[in-house]
Length: 247
Ligand SMILES: NC(=O)c1ccc[n+]([C@@H]2O[C@H](COP(=O)([O-])OP(=O)(O)OC[C@H]3O[C@@H](n4cnc5c(N)ncnc54)[C@H](O)[C@@H]3O)[C@@H](O)[C@H]2O)c1
Image (cartoon, rainbow, N blue to C red):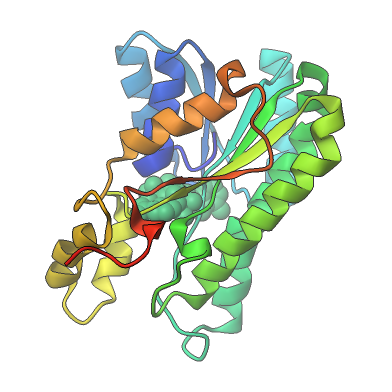
């Protein structure tokens, strides 16, 4: 579980642990990871933290080696780590573009590359976190939208390549979810408080989502309950993508 230090990833880690999974919580933020592990342990679940930079090949290779050394097998890989720059193409530096691609898309490439041999052995599943922004874009987040669209393509490609081995690969496209990343988007709008208030109205359900509502979808896709679901991008967006927002 990458990006497990908080937000949606923290909720996914807690939900999977609550459903009986032994969770390896992965993030670049060691402090946040410790808090996720503490919460899971306090609830009677099993988890441990492995601080990792998903954009760094040696870090991901060390993660895979550590997981296999300690756990001996892996049944699901949840790729959730991402960064967000609230910028147009002209405002984005080359370094920011490369970093965002390296974390959001490159991270999924690297973890998949290193865990697929083990997922083939377990006939396991990969769940990638895309976004409604993959196909329903908004102003001032061009690079982010590009990464989230790329994740859908990568998901489908891996589903085709590894389906014959029994490995399922899906992604989730959340609408606005109440986390620090959503707040980062509001913060770069002209009036952050108004942007936050208006965001709920972009969804058919007239509210933004909670991390736990995405976590339940992720746990389903990672589980055998989703045994005939692969290569798909599931909208968990409160109706954000249905068309014109209600006014
Ligand atoms: N919050 C939303 O409204 C929303 C909507 C759609 C999709 N998403 C997606 O959900 C996922 C989680 O977002 P969130 O809202 O919980 O944000 P978040 O910022 O709380 O979570 C992202 C996590 O990724 C970690 N991370 C960043 N770079 C990393 C790296 N190099 N290696 C390892 N970990 C790294 C961060 O430390 C953080 O814990 C992201 O993929 C995001 O694009 C979020």
